[in-house]
Length: 247
Image (cartoon, rainbow, N blue to C red; front, side, top):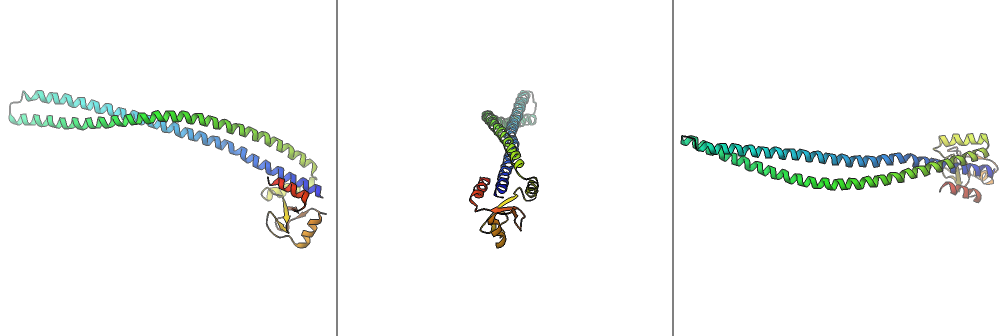
């Protein structure tokens, strides 16, 4: 009977490792996707900065054209001064020139502001290009590490599945069916140790009489509360096997 229980504990140990290995393997694609997302965000940010730079340069060129237009209008206004015949016309021409000077001054301030923004953004883009290059290198390295890890997990999973197959061959068919049913219905744990009269999985007490029967180890027994297959957790040989399941 102890050998049957030892096999069940070993099988549960193997199943636990299979579950954990599959979980780690299945997390790998999400980790790679997260790396790709980080890279895409950095690329999008750099693209946005470049588009903003082009818009600023376009605005600056327009302001420069506006300054040239104002200068042309001012020269025409100055030429007009020599041809006016009345004081009223002369004052109007002077006022127009003054307005053009104020407009030119505002435009020049705007052009200077845009130039400073362009220079600042160009520097930020320069740094952004360097940062993106470094990030691409890091992402490529991290992706390779994850892919290698995923390959190792896949290989290890293959080993575990073969180990499970061999264990299943050694377990009685009816008992294996019972084990698989319990594992499916009890969150992956079909076997539980009982220590000091308490099931270590559902934490409910075992009646003294049943606990004594469990210690004798004559029959396979179930927890009256969670129905898992139970064993005496202080049996030294089974204890070692059970501790292996907790690694």
